[in-house]
Image (tube, rainbow, N blue to C red; front, top):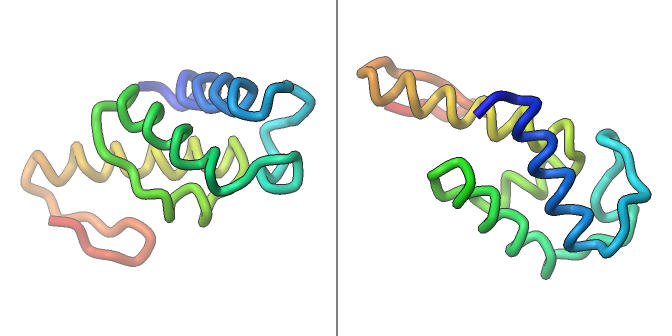
Length: 96
C-alpha cells in the first residue's frame, strides 16, 4: 500500500472514530478529541487493511496521521525486506 493510500485510510478512520473531520494530517489525535478506547478500533482496522498485526504502541508513539502513516509504511517495508532474508532495524530494534 502506497503512503498516500495509508494516509487517506488513516484519515478516514479517524473521521469515523471522532465523528468529525476537523483535523489535519499533523494534528495529534488526543488533542482533537481522541482517546485510547478509539485507538484499538483504528489500529485493528488499519492492521486488517495492510494485512498484518500492528501494535497499539505504534499509535501512541506516532499520534498524528502523517507520523502513523510513515511508521506503518516503515513497518511494512521492513517486514518485506525481512521476508527476503535481509536483517533490518526499525525504531532501534533489529528485525530478522
